Length: 167
Image (cartoon, rainbow, N blue to C red; front, side):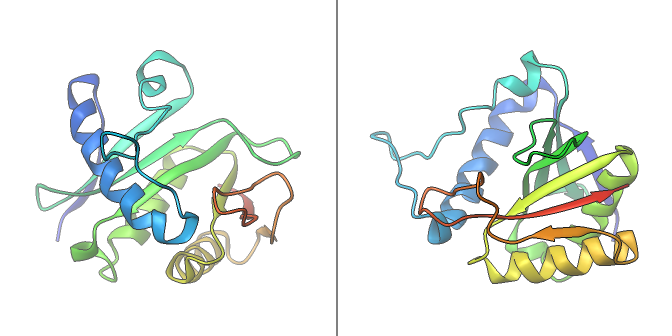
């Protein structure tokens, strides 16, 4: 299996928008978000990935097929200084539990050296286990977990967990 990260260029924006809808649909089981009048979730910051510095989007590609995406920015939700925030991370079902997500996460951490933060919804148990395992392995257990961080509220009112580490 060949796994790679491919930068999302502006001409690929609609592809990313389509994948974001699938991601948001799945995530709505935890954050209870509704669709808009067009039946879409929408992603308010999508255009910013081509109009602002310090925003990066990558497709996860497996054997030439789209398998998900990674979106990174520098907008922390914590009071601590960080360089990067894992804004969105999505691996399609077909590619889960095969090492694709682990590879993509570690590749991104290696590409962007510095202080990281990632936010996870505590009700998304699969995500909780995934990030605990991946970040622990990547950092050799040298990270900080802040559960129910006060300034990280999801649409359903749940406080997000924040993981801080350095790559």
